[in-house]
Image 1 (cartoon, one colour):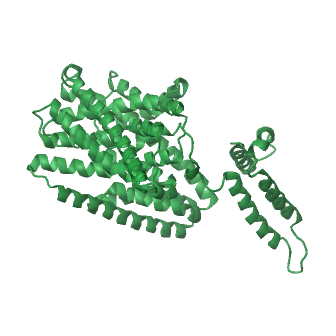
Image 2 (image 1 turned 90 degrees about the vertical axis):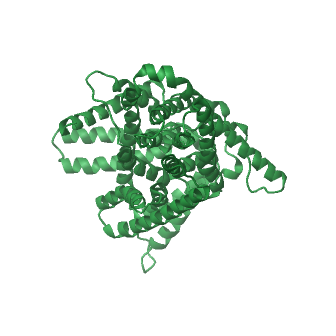
Length: 527
């Protein structure tokens, strides 16, 4: 493909992303579903080139920033609290699902070697971080369930990749060692964590000294790729290296970033992640044509592969439910023995956790990386694509309704010790203490009376509001509605003055920025 054609294709992809997102919004569908379906339909449009994905390039481009985004914003305290449950899903569930899929595949296709069956199990077993984020971003879950899903999707790729590499090696050499596989996994995980910690520490030290906000944002954008590529170069887990870097950067960004850097950086990062997530699903759908052409067309797929793939998909979903409910049973047994550190989620939460196992770009990229001459490669590609389509289209479209049916509530033990209004009152008290001390000069004369009054009033109002949110709810909404109306009037007058030539562009931009900040504050307070 020529450079100009590649550029035109990229522009067409961006236009398709905008159009498909709009369609998803109008139809009330998860954007991932519309993008995946739209990409699959576009793949067979006449005149468009066949999309052939380079698996290594896809993983390097998309996986590090998307993992970084999840790790950057995850609640670290809750992550540590539920680390055992996350490890159970990210390691135990992946291993169990791999075994189940391997057994079912060998039963369906006895001619396929066990190593190939295990490789297919490793390909489809880890739920995808991108798919989980894309589907879950528009639903609300209790904190524990959300952390389990987010943490699992960040860490399980490492487990799946290790299992896949050993299955491929076993298929090529005919030898497999469980002890060697376990040692390799521990080495990859520990090494990845060390590399990620080193990159994260380097990021903190570097960003503190850069000074320029654009350089700070650029350094933050480069951090995930630096961690991933360094980890892969040193033959440890680039996934765990990236997640570790993201956790460190997310923890320290509150103290190394200024307000301006945080606002601009967050806005830039959000747009970049939006385009990357959308591109992933569009590329997955667009690659369908290449997969179908490789195996001999739709006739071969539907006639010879559709039923085995469907049964593998059902086995995949069933294995996750078995693991989740078996884990619940283990917790009940431990509590019966007096070990009450862990508590069960309950059947409705377990159903949600079992159903939220979408697959995505990692599954397809790993399937594409299977060696050309490996037994059953064509079937693996079709099975991987079928699993992605089935989980995203079926589970992705029904998960929201299932969550609404479950009517899950936040357990008291998972709620923070302070509400947002109580934290706001504590912050206001800390501010008024400083202002009261600095409002007087060395001779004891009050030099900042209006500032002191403003902060004292804020502290009083915040203390009065804490714990009585419902009482003030109506008045607050009316207050900020009026603030937004006033901002709109000010903006209209500012634009009129500029169009009339009474103020120049610099004045327009400066005053417009003030109005924008005031509007964002009012919208946040109203929400």
